[in-house]
Image 1: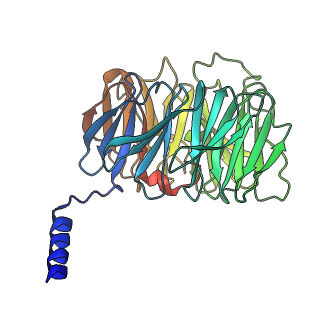
Image 2: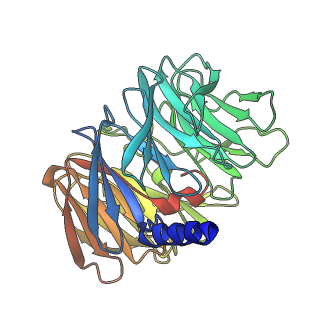
Image 3: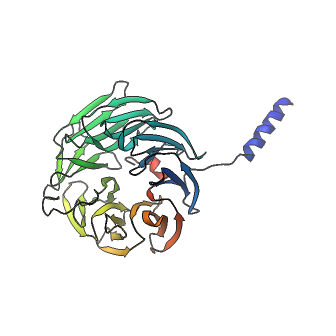
Length: 379
């Protein structure tokens, strides 16, 4: 009888418990207030504002594989763990003086943070946020991404080296690859984890690595392209992680030029250029690859252009508002969410009709991160 009563009580409590599904959620960085906004994609609504994340003036985040936890990387070196099911901060460490993003290992066990000050990469246990490894690099680290096999890949601005940290075994294995180029500023990795590309600020071109090679060596990409041809003021560096892969071509934001570059994904040869409204910051592909959405640096950052990936022509241009900082597509690409910082809004658009569907109030919004990122390499 006691057992039956216990089972009945358990079933009753389970039935009354609120079910929280995370697959439809996202987190928006509110850069000016050190807070984040938890949002629901289907309802196109804000669910909660959570405070206490420190300096989010240049912030990003990654998700745990189960989509429950978001790890937020602050500019002040703070690493904060957010439980989006309870809407609470469950861990926070000040791991450096100045950080520039991070990554989570493919098994979800390790979180790595890329630092400007004191430089290097620090790796933490994803459960406890205890540091498990410190990797000094002798310079500012950029372009930190996860790679298959519990590896992290990152590049050093000061030395022009790319490092591969293999943490699959108890003893870390570090590989250093020199001669990547002058002042690499950002990097990307393809979804299959094979190709790592870093942009160069100090010279023309980019540099790639084939991570499937037994001994990866630098591969020069677009060696005749860059600021050296016709130097222009660079108001804000483009984000290579805001790149696009459409079919068999990369679409990359140009540095200091009003254009995006199309590159064959197999040969890494340039195939075309598309003139744009301004200096692109993000060139992001709709998930089906048919469209590329581009936003721009100050002072032309009130505009979005949409490029057809077949014709490579601009098919739509509009002005959502002042300072469009970031874009995020829903998982299947039927909508795109835009952060319009100086309007204090998240604006949501239909990607087929370009109709505005809704606005959500936000405090100086910047990065938008949906939980679908948990299942993608390099995000």
